[in-house]
Length: 360
Image (cartoon, rainbow, N blue to C red; front, side, top):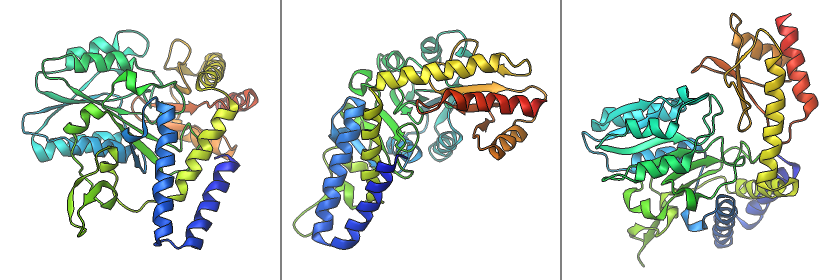
């Protein structure tokens, strides 16, 4: 996190304690903070604030969408074969509870060739209710043509809803969700936006709102009558919010987003990410023992590679001792480095040199 974000969080915590966490003044402050945060997020995504539900993380956002659909026995739920284990587990539980058919489509095979849009179209069924896919695949780094995928899903006799795991795309790609038309887009603030852990969001397309009932229910999402009795849901995406959150984190996220603007436009930042990831990919290609998953330069900031015959876990531990952080991926079995626009070329050189030292 940038120092400005940390300072904003600290100042907000102090303010809450000074005015009283449960005072009327505090309630007004919370409402304002939430509205400002929804507006800041919406501006980054090309939508309006009423479409944004504030959540804790990507998984919460995805679960809101997954569980809010009125599943019926015999419905079909389709996932790509590159989704995060947490999302797969939620889909499996929906399958178990409701008798839903669950299957995957092989997008991993399109990393270096093939048409992901055609693959999705081939795996949709007449009874498919929802397709779950990531905008940038978390394991291979592939950037999917999301708008075209959404179009294929919607252009059917019974349109298929699309839930997008946006953990790796928000803060990286220029986004216009109003144009992309994805029904649900779940994201976090603590990855590429460099915000605090514990605050994220879910975009719900207004036309899809009627398809999604609240599953987690609390005072932030309901309306009441004069006696305080619940009478329904908030009219917009606030209906999916629940109750008390760590509200000072909202200011931290807004400050982090503001810092991104000081560095450059989202397009300029993406160009920097692509330049750096290309540089790392080229450097790794020069090491005979390494195989990069991509046969062409990465499209965003995730660079995945293998060391055949070597322990990926041992390399991760070795690099961490040198204050270099990468991670293992189990499917496919590989290592993944994340190259941010804040990364330095010298840091990439340090990573490559440390890998060479490990292999020596």
